[in-house]
Length: 232
Image 1 (spheres, rainbow, N blue to C red):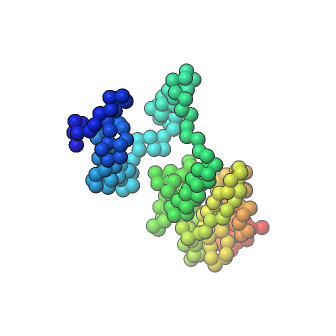
Image 2: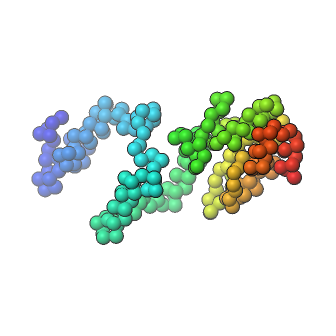
Image 3: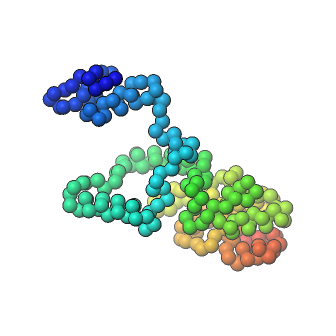
């Protein structure tokens, strides 16, 4: 349809959609009609490129500390808020919306444990692959190789999460490894925080491998000895 095909409301200076009666400017009426009232438009997915991986957001993974464009955007927004040009300070969710969003995110984590590391970054640790599996850093890879050398079966993706309570909310914790032959979980950690200790309390049989253990692993220390020492 061309612009002349739409009725014009002289009181509002907007064009009227013949299908739903909504009013739009001359710049929006055509897009509205195509997207909402044509078969082609309804099938169109503007996020298709993000879904199939052919398109990536320009600012994905960038922060004001690492990118000048992001920094300028943040500074401009702060300036507009300060001088009253805009009152936008972010989206405010109701408690019901927050709860629903939390449940959606938990389900997303369950279905795609590495979804937040798809850019090959997990915090400051680089995602690495070994034997068809993804690991968060070379320490985890060393543990996996060590277990393979000693013919110890382990699981990663099949691990069920443990719930822990932190900062007023319930979160999910996935240990790094599960050894069914020993019935223990392994967490590989370079340093620990208060939140980490809160997570670990939810798992009865958990072994935390830090720098000392990793050094022994790289020397191919016996599995039973290292597990026994770490559990004690």
